[in-house]
Length: 58
Image (spheres, rainbow, N blue to C red):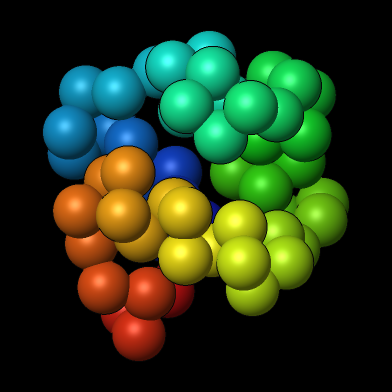
């Protein structure tokens, strides 16, 4: 399972919420969640901060 998807499910967060916080489209976040595209490192750091997780675990 994709770690981003796992964290979203654990925290009860919707992909649309994350997309809004990242200033990305829902489709882009969905590609990250479905492992169709890997986020750039700077986006990973944003995700880390927003979801309050350590990207080392991604």
